[in-house]
Amino acid sequence: MHAFGDHKKNLSQLALAILVVALLALVPACGSDYYVSLFISIFKYTVLTVSWATFCGPTGYMSLASAAFLGSGMYVTALLGDTLPLPLIVLIGGAASLLLALVAGLASLRIRGIFFAMFTLGLSEGVKGFINWWEISKTGRQGRLVISASGTTVFYTMLIILVMALLTSYLIRRSKFGLALRSIGQEQQAAEHIGINVNAVKLITFAATSFWIGATGSIIVTQWSYVDTQVAFSVFYSFMPTVMALFGGLGNMLGWILGSVVFTILSELLLTPFPYYYMLIFGIVIVSVFLFFPSGLVGLVTRWRKA
Amino acid sequence: MRICEGEGVTKYFGGLAAVIDVDFYVDQGEIVGLIGPNGAGKTTFFNLISGALAPTSGVILFKGDNITGLRPYQICRRRIARTFQLVKIFPDMTVFENVVLGSLFGSHNLRGSAQEEAMEQIRFVRLLEKKDMLARDLTVANQKRVEVARALATKPELLLLDELVAGLNPAEVDEIIALTKAIRDRGITVVMIEHVMKVIMNISDRIIVLHHGEKIAEGTPSQIASSKKVIEVYLGT
Image 1 (tube, each protein chain N blue to C red):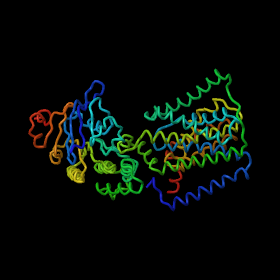
Image 2: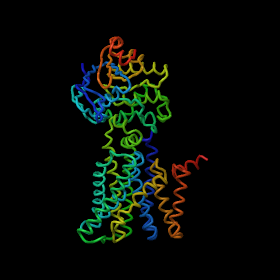
Image 3: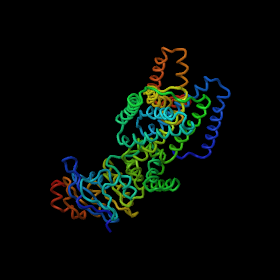
Image 4: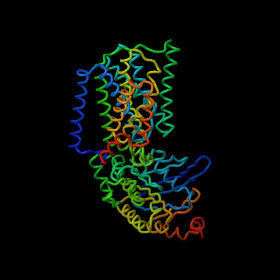
């Protein structure tokens, strides 16, 4: 059954995963700066998408709060500067994001569907507006200078965050919480009546998955040397995880990863030769996938294999 | 022995009274039938016991403990389970996954014992050969069996069955009657809402009649069948 896999299959999957991570760890030694930054970008979007989809995929809650979590992580780094060691700052960035998710979750997880989506969009914009107001009226500035870290440092930190985010998601999905999340998405009332503390399951998952989004924000901001609220809380970061997960296939983890990787590389490939039309081409690609392959890239591969 | 009892149980929706000042009791090992015309407040009454709704006033006791206003998952873990008038299964999960959720969360089992418990209940409702099918692909009668198995997997002492035979054909109705009796024979107390008189008269030890939210009669099937008041408001002659 879905939640309880067999051991042999698990072991070979684990071996494959370790091999992939080991190969990725070689990138900074072998590749150019361009590839290092491309991989950082891929890691960033994969963490965002996997974290988003672990909660939103099975429950059907559409969160648009990713920008709020990512931006909070960035501002933690901007505020703390060089007062603490970088790994600690990254953890604090994750914790700040988790705390925000707990508060937002307590206030909102009772509401469903479109209302939850709009609440979380409001959260992202609200946090952005609040920090903007604070900076302008209390500290008298708009943006902040940020400590910078080397590309290699950012790369390895992101690789660790990626592995942790994937592990978090994997463990949630194969535990009884994963099954409970699906039951909540399919028939919440019945889930409550068979002993599932629905609000606790939702809150814990929402908060745990947002931790790695905040940590990601804390480390990637060190690439930019300067941050303001427009960049940190860009609504783009709230919508991308949804698009990427749907693009790859909402039903399983492989789809989320595939969606993020292919999408990030595609946008990179299109941006350079077609700087003016790339959004147009992109739009056509997205629309075609959703129209003709509603189960995403994974569905496409399955169909192609069968044929 | 009283397993569940209530005093002055009342529920208002705004100005509308759905259940008014109902006193009731259920003895251990009984099958109690709950009947009444549409809109009499039967399902609301179930929602109050199972925690889906909190009563406006009144007290509900289960095995002597006050359970009034507890959340549904808390009531389930205290050993009260229910099914729904319109089936509420998890459609995109297998029969096994549906039922194992009940044992994983309702009876606090570890994974291994939860799986065993689930298999036992699936066998009990005779769905063993369909255990790997998606719940959405089953007939309504079998979906109702999934609901029963899922409720049983939480190891209830009191089971609330809401119109289990509605929409079933006569052969299926007979099977459900046998199933309900088998549940009682395992020592589980049953309260059931039912419109089909044949069923209610056949298997209830005692019947409670609701009308416009009030309890208007209570007694053995033969007492209810001959009660003038019940015949006037309900049996409609």
